[in-house]
Amino acid sequence: MYIKTVEEENIRGFFTDREGSALSPYMNYDVRRTMGLVSVPWIRTRQIHSDRIAIVEGVTGDRILNGFDAMITDQRGICLVTVHADCVPVQLYDEKCRVIAAVHAGWRGTALGIAGKTVKMMKDRFGCSSIRAYIGPAISMCCYEVGKEVAEAFSDYPEAVKLCGDKPHVDLKKINKMQLENEGVDNVDVSSFCTCCSEGFVSYRKTASMMRMASGIYMIP
Image 1 (tube, rainbow, N blue to C red):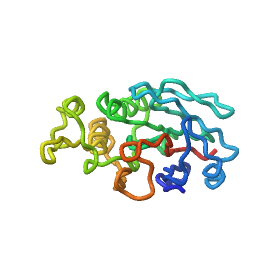
Image 2: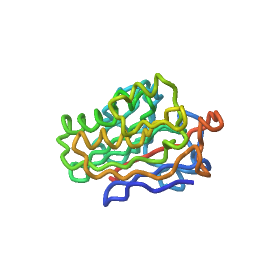
Image 3: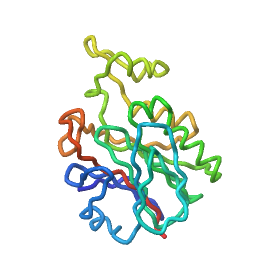
Image 4: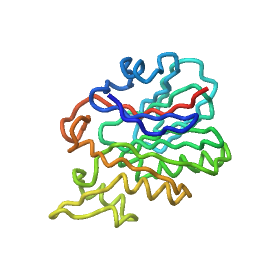
């Protein structure tokens, strides 16, 4: 039902598989119960494939934000949730500063550098200096065949765009990792799972499913 990602002393992260999927805006109570998060507020967002980042504070219950693709908080006891069905989930955390962030990076968000911008906001707003990252299951280069428009959007990352036959393929996970490293994040774990060709995941590219998997990160009070 879920894959554990971050497991620090005060911070936990997870990514659900197909069994733990739901329609957007995501809410799967089986996952919530399994993760022991029934009483923990879930902060979700209606994503728009942008580089808009929300600072989350003063939350006392579940909330759905409109028009953001990343969230940052230093509030303990809440879970930041983004949804995915091939797009790249990025979880960011600074254990020392007790700050977490959740990022949804589709190709447009990746082209806009949303992951790197989220890191910069964590530094500027909260003084974070020891950020770590987890890039979750997403479509991998093997399955991400794109058109000319998308390939050209990543002309600054030639090492992440390759021709397979006469069709360009893009490695979104690699580009997000590079963007994080460019902002000084040296510790980046990357999932090897491809949501399109690995078993057990929801893939919009593969099936045009409207279901979404969740990427969640939270701080223990």
